[in-house]
Image (cartoon, rainbow, N blue to C red; front, side):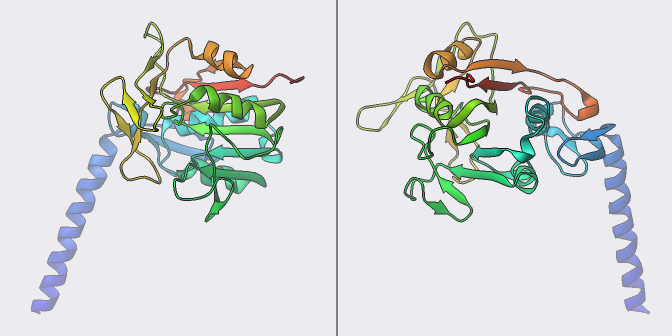
Length: 263
């Protein structure tokens, strides 16, 4: 009898917890739509007013900039699943989706302990500023929130243009501050390789480094000129703010830099 009462009490507690959780879940703002990563109908849930990190697909738990990137890839390169695609600094559902759907997908991380061009697990060791790939290797080059962390972006944009095929595209996201008068460089490298802090140090999360990644640039309107100057690529700034696609909030711009057909 005592054991039975204990089981009944535990079940009652579990039911109360489940009821409270469901009630809290229902209190969040929600809308139905289509997730380009799930590739099916879903519900998007707002867990916090800062939508950038808290407007999630109920099925795959992705956030707006994830869906914005894949949405842009679908629009600007609809045949991407049959192309040669490289992703730098992969991680999460976006990378899983790309790998699953593109037979010629490959990826790389900036590993400090692996020789460039070698592999650590499934990812290749690469430095964006000095890639080891041959010229004209890829149709698409993808980066998600990477270029606010690159110390020498002029070299990185030039290298990406080099490894893209003529007409190929670099499709990417990054925090963008168009209200700034011009781009702010926050850090640079000294000749001895140490960091010269030009502004207060800010770090973002890094999938392979617990200490995070230093923010080196706050990019503004002039970044498209910067890319053209150092790579010859022209850049489109694309925004598709659409809650039916689960795309809304802060920093949802996607940038498409295209290598000239004849270069």
